[in-house]
Length: 391
Image (cartoon, rainbow, N blue to C red; front, side):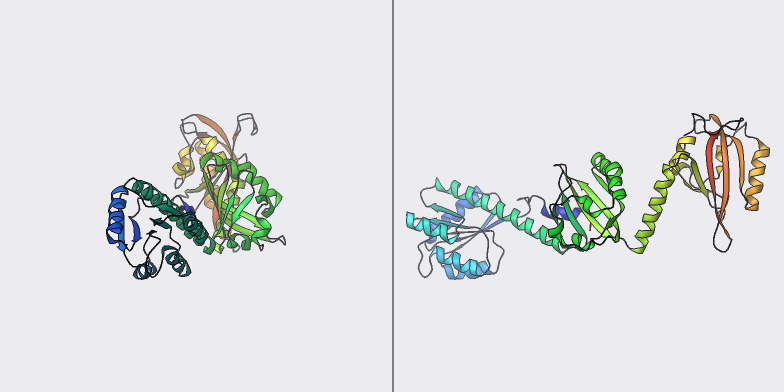
């Protein structure tokens, strides 16, 4: 699941389908007149008319209607009895009592019975009022229904879903969210999110993740929470910023594959934090191409990772590069040995610089060569590898 699930609780659009209204009145000309006026006043309204409450109730039971407009005084079953019978069958759509027999007693009974609107019949001037009341009730009913369905979907989701306000306090979470940390959600709602993270990870959120979330509107990646007993919870997070400064958080426990990705992501963050250019090459591929470089390498050379991946490092060489040094490097690589040297290289703009280079082979448990790791810093012929130009 992703954040698109939360679209289920977005404001409902009345343009999605027609508004279906059931009208009940034992006066046939009156109920047909009401239907005509409502269809005229309300765009895309569809009406059905009944003069007998019993079959009207059967029709309501079959579903599909958005509102009932009923007379009060009818033989066999009055309007309030029709409302009571509908509610007993679980029919919760809006109910408007539109009656020509008005009194304070009837109005009081209507309110007590749970009528959504009470309106006395009159001349044609009453129909725009009726149409407005019906429209408002149906839109509210649709929105509430849509909201309930969305929250039911969230409650039943396997992913943990939480809503955190601008102060970092949980305002809502489903059971799956709390269960991931072996807690009950009543323990967490009203608490700051950092209750679920160790100090170093909370610091990472404050210094890295939340600033990126605020700047870009979303963040996704890996993190590590803790259970009530202090057990680590490797997790995948998707964070989405909200207009009020809070955010929606979707969390999943990592699979084995995800855990490996998280480990790689952590190692990449460590390598990018180093003040040394790093490249990894793969000697099992033709021409020993670069398969990884860190941000310091990009800063040192001006090349981005995408433009260098798959290329041999010789693209850094130029007219003033010493062929003997190149030959020494090639011989060491062919022999699978380490080498430390200084070589004249060129950046993306063609500007030369002295590159203090250390290359080391990496082998597996059986001694087979897996890759070469190269460490690169700005140097000079005096051996000063830590001058002010160093990235």
